Amino acid sequence: MFLSPWLLGLMAITAAPMLMSLVLSFTNYDILSEWSELKFIGFDNYQRMFTEDPTFWHSVQVTVLYAVVATPLKLAAALGVALLLSRNMFGVGLFRGLFYLPSLLGGSVALGIVWFTMFNRDGSFNSFLGLFGIEGEGWVNNPDYALSTLILLAVWQFGAPMVIFLAGLKQVPQELYEAAAVDGAGAIRRFFSITLPMLSPVIFFNLVLETIHGFQGFTSAFVISGGTGGPVDSTLMYTLYLYIKGFTDYEMGYASALAWVFLAAVGLLTVVLFTTGRFWVHYADGDDR
Figure 1 (cartoon, rainbow, N blue to C red):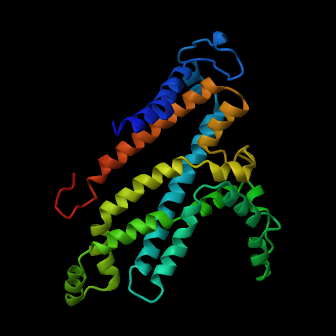
Figure 2 (cartoon, helix red, strand yellow):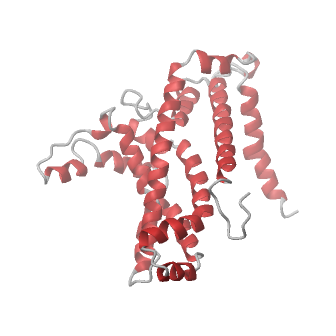
């Protein structure tokens, strides 16, 4: 009885639309036509995607590059700041809140607009470079740098994994550090021999979440590119391309096929992460499975 509201919501808001999108992926549905005009075309959408649509492969390339670069940098920044803020010092709570604040904003439209303004030709970033005699440019309008601004925005929002790393650091027994110090191990040796192995479950957890989040990037790319993926498709993320096909070109059948390929790819990537994780993730109870 108590679960029924949640189950009803799951069926009506999540499960039923997912099932409907799977059906639509085998049709030529374009939103504007009547249901009576809907025609089943089999695997034509999937065939077109892999063999006739170079933009699809370009969006895959942009998304993979974004996720592969942004995720490790974000986790490295989160772990580095977590190590600094794990110490007992005056005002540490305030600093933790300030570093976590960008993550609260999430993928908001307002944040995308601010980022676009900062890295525009007349933005504050170029004003800062001007103090050193460096002439900037319109970073978000240059196809060579536009994706880099999105990666920088993703890395800046490292607050959520930072908090998880902080919780993990609190669970590392201090006796291990004390014993290592007595044996003459320096700070770097203690980090690689104690901190990283003890944090490996937390690192794995953050890696899975942030990798999936990286592949789902949409809002910042949509706002900064004006919903086009520009300039020259340099910020055409996979999810943005899916949105364009469904709600700009009105090819909802094709967009549904894109969505299911995306779901399968992310699921396969997650399986790969869990499969390889057993080789480097170590749990305190000795169960590395």
